[in-house]
Amino acid sequence: MASLDPLAAHHLETRLVHQGSFRSEFGETSEALYLTQGHVYASAEQCERRFAGDEAGFIYARFSNPTVGMFESRMAALEGAEAARATATGMAAVTAALVGQLKAGDHVVAARALFGSCRYVIEEFLPRFGVSSTLVDGRDLAAWRAAIRPETKTLFLESPANPTLDLVDIRAVAEIAHAAGATLVVDNVFATPLFQKPLELGADCVVYSATKHIDGQGRCLGGVILASRDFIDRHIQTYLRQTGPAMSPFNAWVLLKSLETLPIRVERQTRTAGVLADALAGHPALERLIYPGRADHPQAELVRRQMSGGSNLIALSIRGGKPAAFRMLNALRLILISNNLGDAKSLITHPATTTHQRFKPEERAEMGIGDGLVRLSVGLEHADDLMADLRTALEAASG
Ligand SMILES: *Cc1c(COP(=O)(O)O)cnc(C)c1O
Image (cartoon, rainbow, N blue to C red; front, top):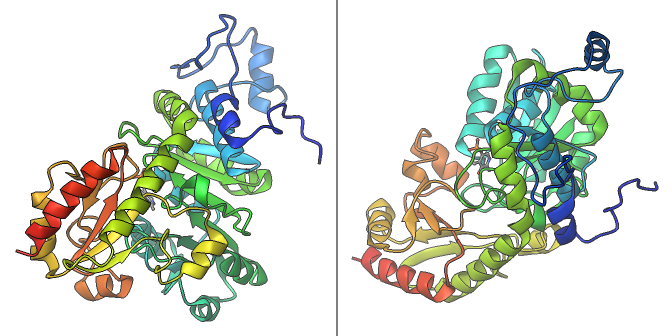
């Protein structure tokens, strides 16, 4: 199909600087921040046409906003999606992508290794409205197949999963979904839009917490839903417009500017993560090191097929359980203890006592989250400085 988009022939880096920009009469270089709730009309007739959808244009910031629209357009270019809708947070995007498709009596199948709040929505929230779910080991394709029921409407997964960095074969799970007449939603936060393209692998919808690498500097919350125009029109558009998890124009402006530097930030972070993972692998204080960019990742073959880079997250299993993991965290001087990720600052977290605290120890074990596991999000500091900090902290972990 011929594209009307003049930027479509350009490389991704170019589009991330220019895509979606529209200039006001003042010809500003940097995109304008339209911090407005609403818009005014030249006449009552024009207002009527806007509401009827007979004339394109803005109405109210819960529905759409020029700055949010620029961010959505740039995200769609990045993902290679027909349409994008921004939300206030990543969880608003996940919830909309699921609830927008579902009604009482429907069934969801999801990988059980998920971000804690995604599991809450599927396990605790949806059942209150008559939507049942089955959680499976995402790595086990037979388990996905066995969980499908006639009323299964959608499948949900995260790959690599938080915090264990296990992968799910997106192409295979998309085929299982489609054979059952269901859809597949992928939370692609850990891979980032640069290193994995779920829509190309057959997913119907991709969601992001833009809070993470997309902001990348720890400032704003945000979320994005990307899919075909038809999927957005059918499942997402009305849900967002009527229930209101809209992204603030201010946050959209920050995130839009962040997209200009996303490739250079994430590529550098990933390169540093690779250096650290290679230098730390086999360290005596570690039971295991899991990094999708290394040949010893348990699913290295799938990593090669599905991802074009390892991303900036490393999982470290510290010998000696929680006390040793805490000794390590407390001995770090440069790397900060924080549950966030994707930031310019390197951040480390202990999932068993934070993001996955609400689960029973057996449930955590099932997800592969041991008491010694820590998750490192590599930032933009120099690799040598990070390495020195990690070496000192791992010595402290050994006691
Ligand atoms: C952070 C995160 C979310 C939730 O995003 P928020 O912006 O905090 O609401 C969802 N999924 C994954 C994988 C995440 O890392």
